[in-house]
Amino acid sequence: MEFTVNHPILFVLAGLIIAAVLGQSVYFLLKALKRSREIGMDQKKIRKTIQTAAIFTIAPAVSIVISVIALSKTLGIPLPWLRLSVVGSLSYEAIAAGNALSAMGLELGKVSALTAQQYVNITLVMTISILVGIWLVPVIGKKLLGGMSKLEAKDKKWSEIFQNAMFIGMISAFLGFVFCDFSMLWNPVEGVAPTAGLVPVAVMGVSALVMVVLGLAMKKFKWLGDYALPISLVLGMISAIPITALLG
View 1: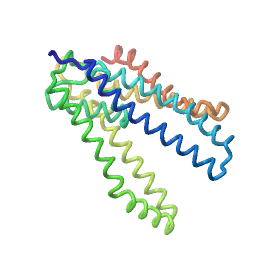
View 2: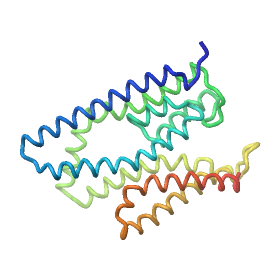
View 3: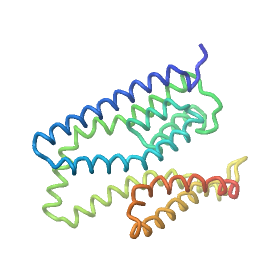
View 4: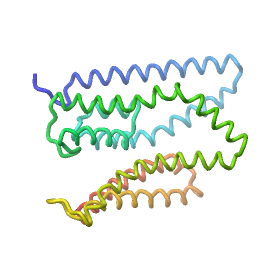
């Protein structure tokens, strides 16, 4: 049987896992509603919270659909659909898949067809790597939270600085992939325009500018806050087309 990244069996396997996750969500939602009635919580507030949460999930869902489409050219639909529906993000999944492909001498978005072995290798890299965060939380989460609480009680200012520093450090790790090809300006690669390394930087700049504009607009239109992320993501991806045509 010839392997394909969009084989029906892969859709069935991914669908079963996603259905199990959805089943858990429904189960705990029903248990929470039952418990809220038992302890006398205001059911109007509960329904309002559920409605707000349901509306809020529409915006991230748009980002997820776009991410699945972006990865489907190389990885097909089942794997990105599974990864981004359960645990994962476009930034992580693209980096993990890109690293796995790079180790095999391939490039994300430029592969016409994957073999079964290549597909399995990519899946293992994407899955095993993300599992670190799952098992690491119960191992060190309580101690880390306790340390943060002690630091906040001792010196709130330094606690805020420490938390902001950790967040900036996390963002900096992803920024490295945005600027990693910047060196092509003075160290060109054969067959690639020297300015090609500026494409991700320019796209990031457009997305950031859109987010700033939306942030200012949110002062008057608060509902934009739920849609700022997908709007900036979509406009950033759209801008990549003319930017790539201009810079190579």
